[in-house]
Image (cartoon, rainbow, N blue to C red; front, side, top):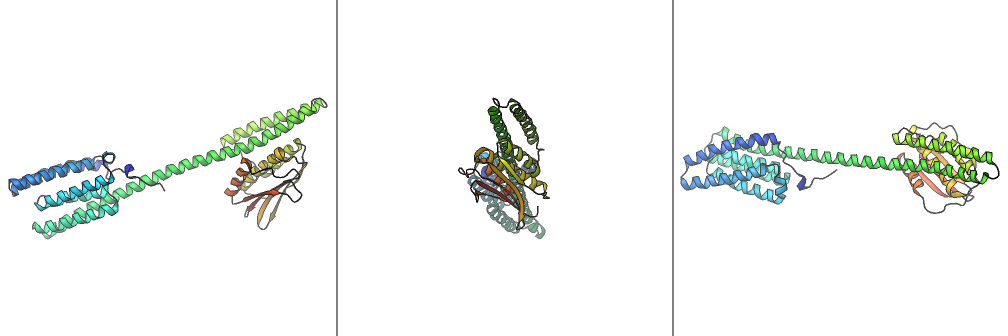
Length: 370
């Protein structure tokens, strides 16, 4: 899952609450300052008012949505630490004890990681309890004020964690969407490679044959070129269907195409394919594998004969294509790599190598059930 950097964080408390809470805070501040002036001398009042003003400035700065771009995580931690000290000082003067402590608790829960916020919340709750008792409040008030400080801090901390989880979920969904797009592009490229590679190979083989027949058998050359036109038209239709996502090759349809491609290249096709009942996904996958295998035979083998057969053995379905050509001529190309990927997606595997009598042997194995 995607992780969030500190720079990506945003205040968890909804802005509507900020817009309501900040003005309400300043109304309470006005009463607090009034209480200070009535209860203390000039020096204590001046110290208290200065502490309230500094505290309020820090609070507004942290409450602004743009604070993250201006303060590092360490800076936010230091700011809340300073607010906590000021809140304790103000509470010690007996001025609206729970208000400033609750603000520190709320900002810690909203702005810090859980392991950093919890000590602040518990400390402010403890100070609220001590000052409530020291200021001679009733038992109900002495219980209510610390409870408010604690609940406010835990509430904002839970909001922050929920907001971070939602942002991480959105980021993960975006990553999954990007991955799906990349996989679809890979699938599309693989389909076009297999599709056009096969069709162009047949066109090349028939065109070469028509060129050789042009001087000796003009009618046959014309028929070959007509077939080239037909293959080209079919390829165009298949490309259009592939682009729109509707084309679903099958094993039997690709067997017919394989016969045409092999015969056009002057290769005898020996086919032994039974009427196996395959699922749509496996049928399509094996159709693509057969197409690529035959394309390789026509392009690279120089073979005179090609065997195509299917069978079932040890609970697996096997598609085997082997020829009597020159054998492997290097590492696997893009086509065979694509065939391996297709088979892997349905739990199958591809095995290639030199056949028992030479040539190239390809075997696709798909485990049951089919």
